[in-house]
Image: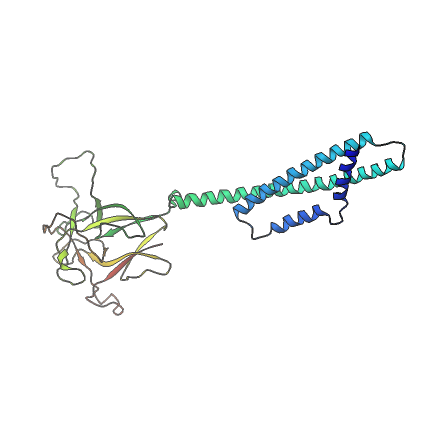
Length: 322
């Protein structure tokens, strides 16, 4: 009975405190939960802490219930003064238990809310991580461009493959009008090595730069290489003719000069391409085949507004990404 009385006095001393420690504690938890506290590590720690608090409350409840049962079993009957004091103490303990039980329920509801928000943030962070880790490839973003006249890519991009610039010959009446970057390691399926009459053709492209000074004439008649580059952190690329800088918000990949097939001698048209300002050449082939050619492009005043453009001046270009 002495042990039971000591326990009763202990819990009564807690319950009779005029500071309402459980209310202050709950308020403290709420205060700590104010913004800005939406960091995942904080929520994780808070969730663990509140779970431990709930376990502590459960242990206190179990202990109080044991004390209550012991008092009930040993309480005097007959309405004596001593019995009345004990019953008052029992009622006080019951009240404390109700308060603790409500506090525990509030903690459980708060834990559920924190757990739900924490899982939402985990899901959002996982999705963001997958986009970053995969270069956003899973969502179809990212882009490629061809760097003409170079065998490598800028530091802003990754090399997909390097190859040979190819297109139509100047004297061909049919075939394509665009340039292609042919890989250095072609693969074959069914084929015939016999030359046919009615068939498309493609030729290597040579620099034709002896009549201008924007490039070194040492590259005249040399074959042009190319490289295909991947930009994983951007979703689009753009070639801007007549510029060496990119629009606001865009990243410069490389700059150079606009080139195409020449206009003389009834030659076939081609697309305009941006050839890097620092040329490379294909190794090991220095013959002047004069088939597919590219020349620097000049502006012609008339329909083209001059100024700002200047007749006979070689046009620049820049490739940008965003």
